[in-house]
Length: 494
Image (cartoon, rainbow, N blue to C red; front, side, top):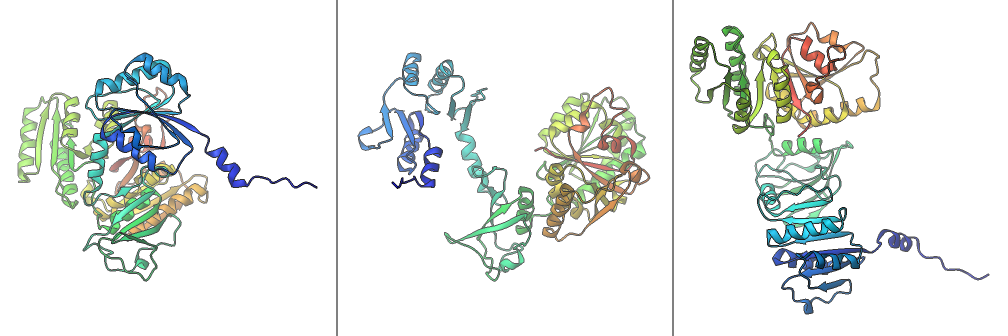
C-alpha cells in the first residue's frame, strides 16, 4: 500500500489562520517611517504591505512582503487607482498635514465605505463619525503614557485580553504596607487573582512564598479588574480615598422649602461627611430660585458658625447652572433631599454626571452606624464593591451584605459568586462583613428601619419615566420612594 504523507496538524492550522492580508499604508514624517521600521523587523510574514511614504529611502528597505509606491493620494483618481489593484483589509493614514489626511480619508470612503481605516490624529478639532475608522490620537497617547507614570496610578494592559484592567502592574513604593514582607503575606489561594510575575532591577522572575517583596518591585497581577483595583490600593495603602475616583469635593443642594432646622441638620451632615475623609474636600452649598432673603441670611449665618474656609454658599436662579458649577468644581458626591432628587431633571442629570448621590433620611448621617447592600445584578455588585468597602471603612460602618429573597433562593451560582467577590475584597481591606440570608420581602424587611445607610447601585432604573411606573416600580425605585433612611447611590457606569 502506498503511504500518503499527511501534512502536520499545526501546518494546516497556520495556513488557515494566517491567510494573507493586504495592508495599505499612506504615510509621511517620523511616525510613518518608524512604523514601517517596526513592520520590517516583524517576524509575521503573512501580511503584504503596500507603502506610500513620502521621503522614504526605499533602496535601504529590501523586504519580500513590502511593495513601495509613490502616488499623490490626495487626488481621487490616484486613490482609485491604488484601491482597484487589491482588496485591502486595512488602510493606515499617517500624515503630517491635516487637510491632506482628511482628503485621503474622504476619497477612500467614496470608493469603499466599509474598509477598516486607522487614522492617526495629531490635530485639535478633528471630528470623524465613522464606524469603520479607528482614531489614534497622538496627543491622547502621549498624555496617557505620562499619566501612567504618575505615582499612585496603576498601569493596566489595554491591548491584551479585554483591556479592562484584568492585567495590571503594581509598583511597590518604599514605606508601603508590603515592602520587606514575604510574598506569602500577599499571595492568594483564591481563583479571583494571581501574581503572574515580578520585575526587579530589569529582571523578571516568578516569586516563591518565602521571597521578600522589595521596594521598587513591579508586580504583574492577573484577575478580576475590581479585585485588582482593591489590591492595588491595599499594596500602596490607598484606602479611604473616597470620593475618588468620582471627584474630590462635596456639593449640597438645599431645598429652601424645608424648615431652617432641617437645612441646618443637612449642612451638619455634609460637614460630618467631610471630616471623616482623609483628603480635605471643599463643600459647595447651592440654592436656586431665591425668594426668601431672610432664610438665605439664616443659611449664611449657619455656614459662618462653622468657621470653615472650606465651605462656600453658591446662589443661582438656574438649576442648569448649579449642575455646571458642580462639574467645574469637581464635586464627587452630591447631597440632596429625596423630594428634590425625584424630580426627573435631577435624576437624569445626576445619572449623566456618574457621581454618587447622598439622599437624606429621617435620621442624620452622624447618628448612623450600619450600612447595608442588597445583593442584585452580579455586574453591578462587582463594579461598586471597591467603593462600598472604602465607604464602610472610612465611616467605620458595620457592613451587611444582604440576600433577601422571598423564594429562599440563596445558593444560585451568581449569588455565590457575588458573596465570594465581596469576601475577597473585604480580606484585602482587612475588613469584616456580615452576609445575611433571609426568606423575606426586602421592601417589607427594610420599611421600619431608619438607622442604616442603604448603599444602592445608581443605574438606569432611577431615570424611568414610564406612565406605568407607579404600578410597576423597580426594587430600587420602591426603596427610594417608600423608605425614610438615608441612601447613597453609587454609579455603576464609569
